[in-house]
Amino acid sequence: MNRFPDDHEFPDDHEMPAELAEILAEVVPPGGAFRHRQHIHLAFITVRRHGGSPAAELISRWIRHIAAYERAPQKFNATVTRAWTEIVAHHVSADPSVSDFDIFAGRNPALLDKRLLTRHYTSAALASAAARAGWITPDVEPFPWTADRG
Image (cartoon, rainbow, N blue to C red; front, side, top):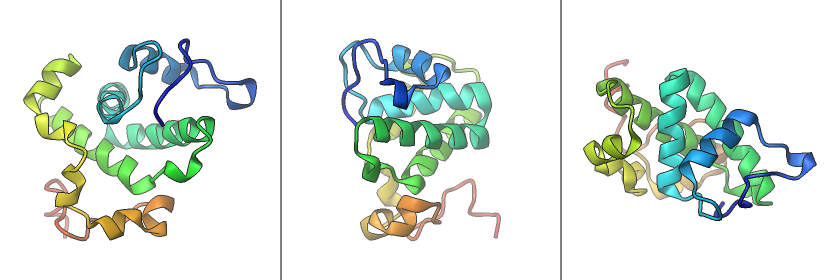
């Protein structure tokens, strides 16, 4: 999932949802790449608009759509998508007054390190068929906001 057409248009059989197109226009420069920072920016905007749980569902649907467009559906990982959305949602709720992504990223630089999930998951767990298909709980360390749910 690296590049989009300059106008972020999808072929008719892969019509892009309007809200996703709007957000991508903001987070990916024309002809630019959709890499980790852009994923986090997408999550930031979506969490701020919809809240954590609804954002996780929307982003999962959108990333699947993008992966299908890129003819790489195998790249979608349900656990990775949800985990990153929950991490972003946790940081958004901790500092809800921040509406600018660059300020948010500056205050939370660990979010820009795509290895952050290794604090919570082994590589084998994240690469598993179960993680690709649905949610699996962390196998290294629980997320701080779920540790007390017991």
